[in-house]
Length: 229
Length: 223
Image (cartoon, rainbow over all chains, first blue to last red; front, side):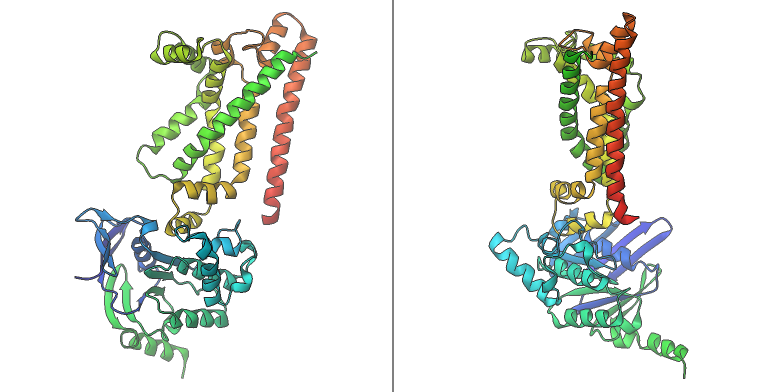
């Protein structure tokens, strides 16, 4: 049985997907409007699908047949999008510790320092979130998502809009961590270095699943041909 | 001279009404901003209704509700030891209902203007409704809270129809400044009516100027 089976309709758009998270990293690849972000929002519990089943690490998060729907905050998922959505009235430290209500006060501060360190952002701890640059915001957003130690990290084009050096550094740091990730992208150059399973989504349907470099090889060749001799 | 007894009663009524309204309207506006319940439009309509109803209509129904013919009126009378109608407590009940939209509308608008991505993130990080309200919505829409408080206070200060219907005109108990103006005009004391009216006009204008000055300060960094 696949880990994820979703059927969802939104206006004229319909999403019907079935796949399993067989690798540490799963890249969901596809053009704009393919339904990638909707898929991630359904996984996060922010959108309720018409029907479906979601199982992460053996835990059922959604099963519409049996009336199971784990609330958003109890799914143990981190979610970072292109928009970091840091709480602007809080400092970096308060942002990162926001999801640590279940952790004892004594352990909270070291945990915040630890996750900020993972993204080279420990020096930003006492800065107001509203005063950070784009790259800094994204590092802090990732640290905040990882602080509660989620079972799965959902990333919706988190590096779009960042300069190449920042994007490369952040992706390298993420790849060096022992994380389970579903990563959305429409940028083949960005995803090529990720040792992942890829799920290709087109107009709400899964059109291919497999090792990233095999499945996307043809896409890459076409792109390289277009770039010139 | 301004009727100081009426002034003190008006200030007390406006302050108590504002405090009660904020305590009721903050959670109600939060619910309106976050819920997708099917009956939200009904709750929205009910909270907005006092804005459109003629004050005398609202005052009449409240008078009936607070009187000895209803269970509510009898129960309130037993608890307080006196009837709600024609008392300060009755005026507070009427003012709270009459000014409800002035508290709920700005707060709900303020909460809805908060970027939904912040609310999504707070939910993903395990925050429940209370934490979203206290940790995200209220700090990010403080201006709406100030606006709601100022509107409730000034609206209650200027109330006439509902106050007259529920409270009548009892000096020291239900006679507010707006009722005092009515009395002064009835007595052809136009100079006194002018002083009281000018005083109320200045209070309302000052509240609005302070409110808009605060809004200008809040919006300045984004200009």
